[in-house]
Image 1: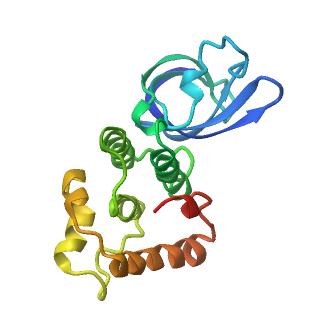
Image 2 (image 1 turned 90 degrees about the horizontal axis):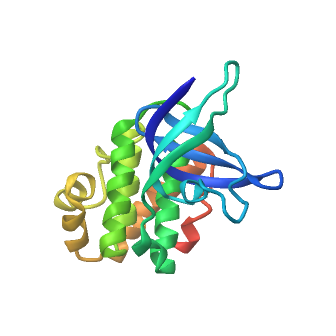
Length: 208
């Protein structure tokens, strides 16, 4: 079966001498583990489509009885060059992708979560990092995954809480930094991922 979909690369890992297994979060088919054959060779045509947080239009082939599609073509829509120009933005983009990866089961379509990730990467690419971005993104991803903190009884003021959950990225950037409230929100995340999901976010120590 051949099918096409828009997707964003969440992570990649080597396979054999020249292949990669790439986690692609697609708009219509959800999170897929995709085999990219020979992309680690110097002149591989699909190499760009297998790079971290690349946004692309992908073509896949799924053999009957297999759970692992093979990427057979496509085109890169954005490699987010602005993100790759700075270590801070690079780490934050990787953090976005890790959060989505941890909160998303395989092959479960989540177009709203896909739109959240794409919009956040586009914003980061254009404008760089700011204090509340990471926290706003994670709160929204948790909401879409069914683990949200919208009804948390104590903590941030209502206006700030609403802006983090629903405001535009421009509005989130305009919020004044607040180390105390930021630490409170980070505590919610730490307890949830440790106790609720049983995972540690590897990228967390590298983002602000």
